[in-house]
Image (cartoon, rainbow, N blue to C red; front, side, top):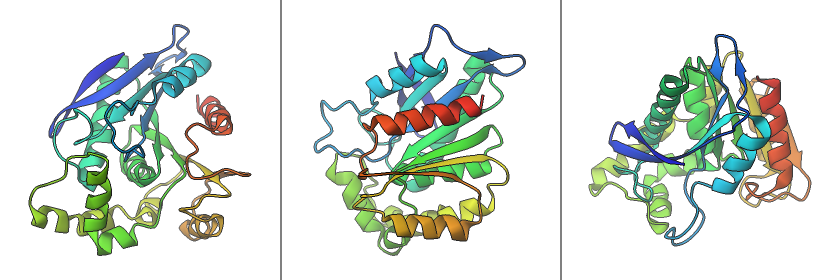
Amino acid sequence: MEIEIDGKQGALRGYLSQSGSKVKHAGQGSQILIFNFGIPVAKPIAGTDLFHKELVERISNQSGWTVLSILCSGIDGSAGRFSPMGWCNDVVSAVKYLIGEDEAKSVLIAGYDFAASICLYVASRCDFVRGVATISPVFDLSGYSAKPQLLASRAQAVGIKIPSKASDIVAWSQQLDDLDPAKSAEHFGSKQWLVIHGRDDEIVTDVDLKEFLTVSGVAAEAHTLTAGEHQLISDPRMMAILLGWMERNN
């Protein structure tokens, strides 16, 4: 079902699936996964299932977990305008919403593409989040931090609302520096980190990702899918790996 979540810039749209056989553990409440699919790929986004409802329903039904997909600020009816740290605040708002609703003490979050860095940042700094899944992650944000207008153009091209003032976009440089995944890794501690990546990813090479994970020093559970490209959301192997990770983190 579609829901609204109170965010710092106003109401955020979400799609929530709760399995009838929802798994609960004494003192923990529901097991929860929150998905942030990030910047849409489709152009234009009108009429596109940005929630990925079928995937959310399948994961919920097969795991017994509560699964939420959120549309962050500026996307298709969610209030406000896009900014990197604004999206981090949106994920935190979603975490707090579900913890309050289901009396859960902790959740897992998952992010795709640019949103992988968003979710990694939140997981590294939010006590309620005990793990993060990063799917087809884009961890090198240096190009965007040097020229934030590139990120603004990418968002605007698919219909995401961006700030009207150029100075607000220039301010993203510092936000993106703060969002640097290498800095997030320094704060990650003993939390669980899953990485799913396609060997034939045309945006992030296998070599670059392995180098980042080695330098980060965090013991991530990394899976490289043979013949997998950047768009892994529809790959059944991705879902199988994600479900296995969720089960191990019950």
